[in-house]
Length: 209
Image (tube, rainbow, N blue to C red; front, side, top):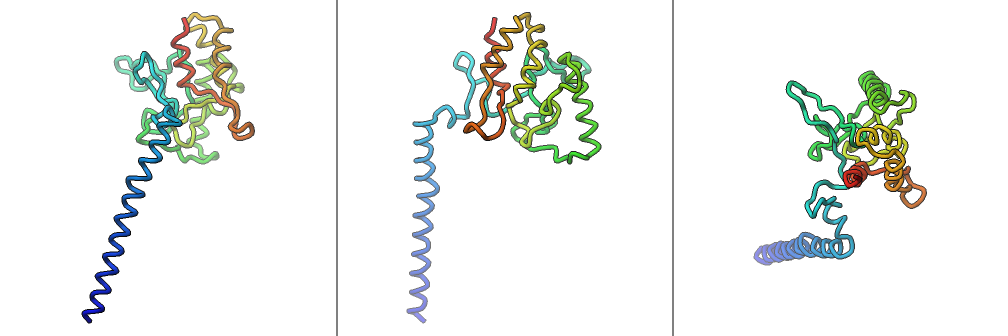
């Protein structure tokens, strides 16, 4: 019995030592090494792909946001600001683009609620941008899976050019060229679709005089 108890204690001590070793390796060493490599090789991405204005972080290129007019007295639903390119709808949180409530609406394509919402959004976007309803791209009326996607299709970005140019008193060609300069190609040349990061586009737009 004494020998058996000794073996049990020895095994437990060995297991404890292994636990401590792997805790140090996986809980401290590995995170520090990965963080060091990330900061050295990809510092911008590792720090959240922050967009800065005069050295002050104002947004992240990884998370979309709303570009609305300030709420007026008695108004409960904010209206989109015509001076900015608008993102796609978001189901993340009550106001959309809430990083603490990332997710989709989980409504199926045949759900009456979604069909009605899409029809209403298409009509609203068409009226807002001054285009026929049948020309409104799909991403202008549907939310992304995360609800935080900052990208829209080039088609939706170009659709908004005339409205933005008019609201800001800018040359349409200049605004269109700005959009063209922010079109990102398909990842690896064949994955997904071309896209335009609305947050980065609007940040560049703010600098146009």
